[in-house]
Length: 514
Ligand code: FCB
Image (cartoon, rainbow, N blue to C red; front, side):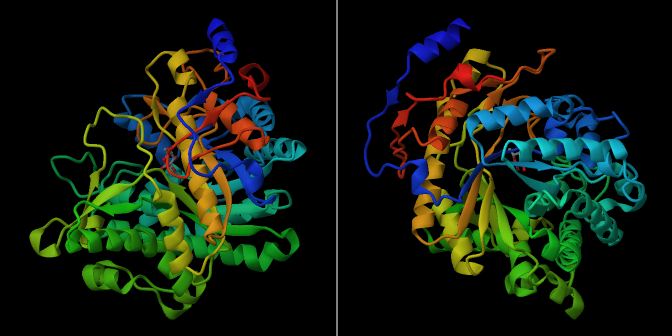
């Protein structure tokens, strides 16, 4: 409490010298959406309550991959959703991006719908609508029902396509009168690289090697197989939506892809073209089939028969199957040329694409993500220039901080304020350059169970102490900054990382508290 008073008394604050252009909320189009995001397993908790069954994410966490931390309670949004909707309203969010837990809604993966699951999502959606907050719903966020993984191998089997379509059907039918933005799959490209090539994410399949912990998988074929089934499942759900629901419900459906912004490690022409190739293929693996009907030629050439083919009917199904692109972006990586001739038996996705990535921070103890100038502008430009300037929603973007430090230092998250200000500034720049970007969702609303780091690091606008029995939500400086920005009372200056961070106005830590 004392700390809060000190912080509030310290306002207005202005850090670093102002320079360059300034911007405010009103510089964005009036219908541009600002929101925050979460995903089901990462926030809901109540993992085995009211009929929910485990997903591949539960299994991954329970297998000791995340220093034995579990999301079984997480932020307990299952019970605290009303409080969460209130804090969103206090901050002034236009929209909330969350995901529906398939195994909560349909505990057997297919078949009977769980009435308790229906009730929960109906309550959450109704509450959001009551506060004028648009629900933006993702259907798969690393959480396929484990029962389907066990039954037929999950995404590596074609059988998943029909089951996913049926799950989507239930969601469209039950919630589509109120949900107008549907995303089929979260970061489909990272899901397959992390889950089937590296074995570092659910469902943890990869070729066995001294450095991997996978009990099954094949890194040289399964990422492509899983990706193919993801594309077919996505397209089948979209076709269903368009034929059965879209006209009546008037919503939009898209897919979410992760972009890295690869920059060349050196200024040799080899590294330069490696970075261009990496940017193009990591997105094009999914977006080329979706926009043009097939995988990029370069992938076909390098991967050969390990890359599945689309029949004419499948290609027609997949082609054109989005109304918008959902984009997750965090930071830039270096790309280095890595010709196939150097590789021996090494056959992962990035080797197939003939590049290696190298972190731009060479110290592994550094947690905070560097803000790379113009990174998001480059990514949005690439989407604009390559894929016909489809509408884009930035679904995830945010700063990572350590969690083990004191609550006070967690709450005093200047690095997150700077990050948001810089990247929201880049979004505005892209808009002015003609990008069709329609919305921005901060990752994340709350400190939650992180996909790679469990409770070790966090991205939240609100602080939660996992050991607090009440899981009290406490606004951070970033929540205060975001709220002031959204209310039009903060002027930002950040096109090039030179920040003027002003926090002098309406939203105070007290007014934003849960
Ligand atoms: C993304 C995931 C998300 C979150 C962030 C930090 O790759 O979609 O669930 O954990 O990373």
